[in-house]
Amino acid sequence: MRTKLLILLALVAGFALGQAAVEPYQVSVNGNASKIKVGHDQDSLILPLALPVTTDREEWTVVVLRDDKDHKLDVKMSSIKRKVRGDTDCYYCSATGKCAQDSPAGSGLNVSGASEYYCNGTGVCTHCGGTKKL
Ligand SMILES: [Zn+2]
Ligand SMILES: [Zn+2]
Image (cartoon, rainbow, N blue to C red; front, side):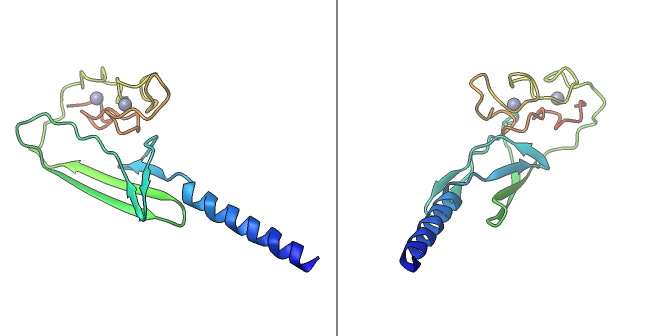
């Protein structure tokens, strides 16, 4: 009886460990929940991020907070560029603030139901950052 219980515990523990290893990380980008799928390589997580390049020189600050307990990656990314006046309606998203590349717009998913990379799976327009203004 005791041996059986130990074997069962070992199985459960092994299963739990296996589960923990493959449990997906929930990514949020600038506070927006993302559909990005995170890859694994030994102890590293591989986070695929898309950077829109609009000028001949782009500088970005990307900060990633990794929370192994809750399986979360909190990404803060911002482009260092000249301040825009923000008084024209964003024409990329028709001033909706939603990513126009998504299907449907703002879902963070592409036509095949995978994470849409223009908005890093957040559904937020990358050009106006959801503010609807450029
Ligand atoms: Zn998108
Ligand atoms: Zn926009």
